[in-house]
Image (cartoon, helix red, strand yellow):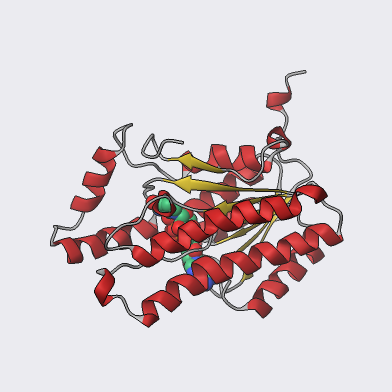
Length: 265
Ligand SMILES: NC(=O)c1ccc[n+]([C@@H]2O[C@H](COP(=O)([O-])OP(=O)(O)OC[C@H]3O[C@@H](n4cnc5c(N)ncnc54)[C@H](O)[C@@H]3O)[C@@H](O)[C@H]2O)c1
């Protein structure tokens, strides 16, 4: 039998944060197509139209739970709702994040708090609470934290976002070591530049700070990728499905670069 033709995520129940659009939505669709049940979270009261379309196509295997990951009681409610509908959580795609930037000397406490409350505090406690649930249920699960190439190297205009993603790489390593005795794997993905709603915002900010026409930064970063173009959300799905699947059973504590060759390890 060709095992590659089997649904690679059958019997998995994944929680995905920040899944209303961009990479999170694409990975949700990929997880569903490989047989997973998915509980997805984002901060909107209602799912976005794109997510609502996916829900209509998967009424028995996909649910949405409005969740702001910075509010720990909402994270607890997400985990309860996930378990109630689809049973123990086996997989976490820890993806919600925000972007902002400013020259280092101008960046203020509000920007620091915004980036660290979502990208670091939110991501850490979502991970910690899902891990606790896996331990309670004796699930040998898999966590995938969304880092970034920005976490590999600082940038003069992007200090807090870069630091927040470096923290994700570090938490991935610590959590992987803490959970290895339980058979739970914790890995990360570090995308390069991916064309999503976040990049619309990034491009507009660079245009302001570097005095560029709109679209110019996007064009330049795409051309600078060794493979010559910006990735799409679909380019992240293969790595996410692989790390979530049993094919990656002996892989933990790694952050995989998915970036067209921009960062070498
Ligand atoms: N697009 C890129 O080039 C790129 C590169 C490297 C890493 N990443 C990372 O990939 C992940 C997905 O990014 P994307 O490009 O799809 O971004 P995106 O902005 O399109 O999606 C992020 C999602 O997170 C949600 N979110 C933000 N704050 C939240 C909160 N407090 N609670 C719940 N949800 C919240 C947003 O509503 C949004 O749907 C992020 O972790 C990002 O840092 C993206």
